[in-house]
Length: 348
Image (cartoon, rainbow, N blue to C red; front, side, top):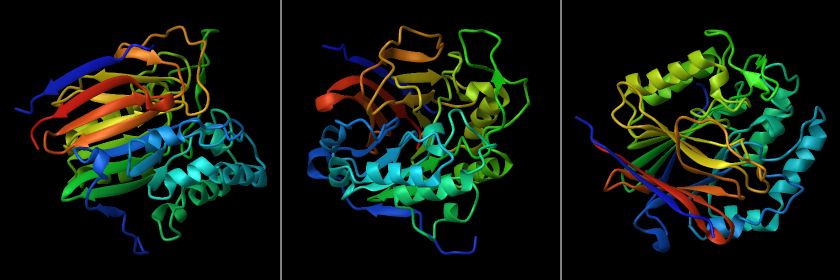
């Protein structure tokens, strides 16, 4: 039986087309009426049966967020990619799960079309439309007509708001630097070299954070933000962009901001104290839904909280508006609670 680790952290605060990205939800389902719940996950291989959909549904989330690698299709054949999305979307358990859910999400490399791929991928615009089709994105949505799958959705629950800010870490991402250490794949670029989001997306992100009136702001990144020393893809490959996002969260004063991520085939919580930010910045990684890094034996992460989970898993966010609190849970088969982290955001 896997140990359940609990951490409690308390911080005191001393376009052209018409498109509505606000969802009004009057109340949460009875089983979960004390919280508003959002579930998320990543790394779902369409060739492997996803056993977790019924377990996820037991929590009655109103939203599902795809965190990337929603299918595995490293290819330049767009029909092959389309077929894999269709196979994924026709899974009986998934269809049952999403029938009363709002679905949003981003991509990572394997559904983008190239392992560790970025701006150089030649079919990224066609791939973008296939992802949006899979997500059921409206034809009037801004991301249908612009480069990149970044988007926002504001949820209004009886006057309480959660803003989901979905980033695109693929379309604009520039070249990575191969690691000189043979045990790692990538190493950080020279400071100031390259970009994760690109200029247009950065301007959009600043606007979305600055204009947010939500009590909680959830930033969706397909790759890890805080854990960056493992030698795989992460924001750490662009150290100047880590600083840029941290400073943006501080300067825009967006309330209750935290990050969710995927990619790594493990699940973990990371938390970092940021100068000027009155609460720790959390990066909640949940990966994967169908397969995991079962041989994981450890890696350097100065910000880790608790243990690394290497069982198949999904993430659950439970918003307590009355107490300005988010309960973050890693759950697995049969809805087992594998680990929990609680963050209280004071000063509304």
